[in-house]
Image 1 (cartoon, rainbow, N blue to C red):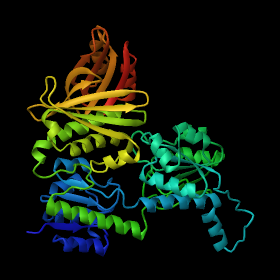
Image 2 (image 1 turned 90 degrees about the vertical axis):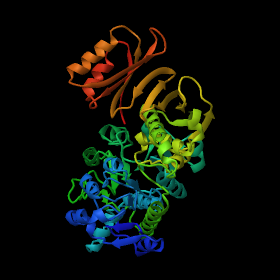
Image 3 (image 1 turned 45 degrees about the vertical axis):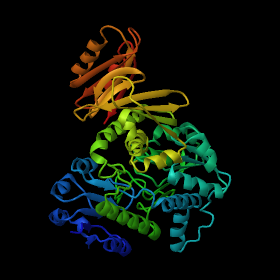
Image 4 (image 1 turned 180 degrees about the vertical axis):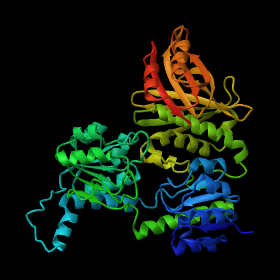
Length: 528
């Protein structure tokens, strides 16, 4: 029996025809995604669900989707999909991360030009029958400095177009290597240099805990007076209240925004400001981009439903059905080791070495490496999946080496991930025990044994009597419940590591109190 796919948002007829041509039964109901009750009633009959942004794939919908195997998002963002609920049900969630890069980059350039020459305001004035030629005095882009925050796929295209306009381009991206910067013709700088040197600043980074409000009041105060800000990436990257104040004071000469903290933005304090250009999240809104992502998601979903092939999945690597039972536990280890290292790494990564020891080295290490890279890159870059992670690493000039060797030490199989930056080298190792659960077995050469928990505290300290009791007292007094406590040390009285699994992440004052304990070197909350 042919698999059935429901298309609940608007998708091109060509994309719908791809399903039919591939032998997949498809129902095209583009308005169904807006009707929650009707969608809930219909979903039990389908193996696949193709969506854009209107359909909300909630835990309730997933619970009703008895046959659902795959959700395909035509586009990048999956804010409308409950990824955790889908993963728990074994539903693959796919997106199309590269289909609208050129369109979004061109929109950023268009917004920058419109801002520089005050085109929207001048257009409205002229349509109103005025001829205010002396009112609209713009600035040239020629020889100006453009600061690019986030120089991945879209950011690199923006940089290329800006170089064609004879702008000077500087870029901040923790994952951009010096070699890649030279290749695309930009100067790699630190974030403060972007603020200090740029005439225009454009953002092309995902919204993560690390990038939220990356341009806030403090950042704007560091900027050149008269800087212009362009955001066609994600709402929340720019602190909008701080931007408003900076515009009113003249510190910021203008802003061009395609995205907002709350969307749809039907009212906003920035609306009506003559030096603010706004569009309603149009970055990917061209016929070419919409067609590209629609065709891509149809092909990906058909491949999965008919052949089991996985492409651009956010919660599953490329892996065959035969490999899955044996490989899956080690995929979990690899991804969590990468996430562990990624959450602790602040400097630009130059090289990642992944060592496979024992029988795991004879498995599909490509999938394992993809999982490790996805875990490593996701804390900084957000929606990196196990398929796109190698591409993202390559774009940023990160060298990735795999090493296979026979069994060594006490464990039959293990994976060791080593991250190298200009200033440090950190290694973390893990394995799978007989119960199928992932375990950490070594950090920075210090042996210990710990399960991964949803919320953990990574603490480095000097090995001294009384430390464990003091730590327990601080957490206990704050009402933080400890699930597990794991310790390791390099030598008596030397460097020690404490991994504490807690029921929920402690608030900042508690982390500050732990960090203030005697002999503590570092405290870092981790999430898995």
